[in-house]
Image (cartoon, rainbow, N blue to C red; front, side, top):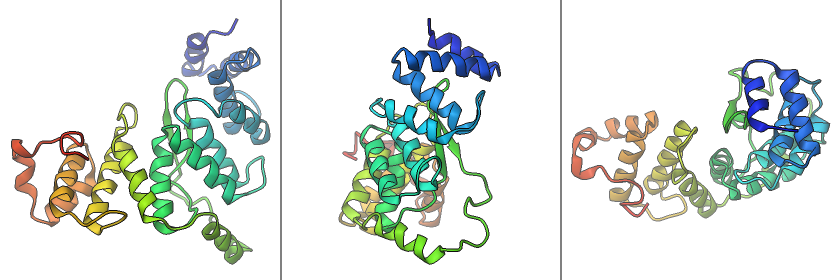
Length: 254
């Protein structure tokens, strides 16, 4: 009988093949979390042979899970053509589903994608739920390294898959700023910074110096180095020590 806690302990102890077998058993019993974890093992070749095509089927089975991790990983499969044909439109569709389900990586990604009007290479290329939600970051070496034979055609497809929309960018940055920071503190801080930038730049909303300042201070206190740099560059450092300005996003109507 499948027991998630036992399988997670085996995984954390490095017994990957044992854990993968357990997740597979749970998936066959209809457990969507087990299906997600087994799909992740297949996608990364952890405890089983690398098989992105098979991984896709398990991510699809678990795609309704709250949190949006499965849909995010499906978006990555379609972005990079792993186990499926490369399809930037499907990538965008799964990214939207993921964001709606509450995935902060997808929310931040869509905010930037709607800002630029392009499906670009993300910093986060996959999400693990073993034993909890954990972003997997791209290596320092770009995934698209060297010459790309159909670069111009590929670029056209990336820009045609999503349209610029400042209002939607603003909405997704706001969603990310309000995200529960558990396990993803760094990403939540980034969301707060980008939400503050919307008021600085008038992106999808009216320019608002006072609100942008208060949001930027909140982002800095959450750990955003970018927000802290903005504060220092704009002579706002004294406000960081002002207790009267220590407002949360909720308190200031963010």
